[in-house]
Length: 127
Image (cartoon, rainbow, N blue to C red):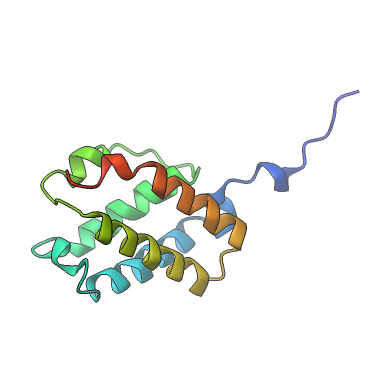
């Protein structure tokens, strides 16, 4: 007998967060926090924030399992020359977690997102 698939068990984080609209809300809140933090704000000097937010929303949707094709730069390529420090990386994680808490993302899902962000750290810091 074939077992039924529980659709709730196979939902992606993208789906659980609420799709593109929720991803854009996460990205906007996150960057609002980042550009107002003196620890990390200098990374965004001279950056087109509208373009960056759009690009980040596309990447995050893709990374969280959304039906989005990502054809941008690799993490290493997009962070080359920024010389992001461990301190800045940790501040970024704190801002992302605060954003996800504010938007009522469940603890388990926040932990999964943080685990992903921590897993890509070698491709981002000191590049």
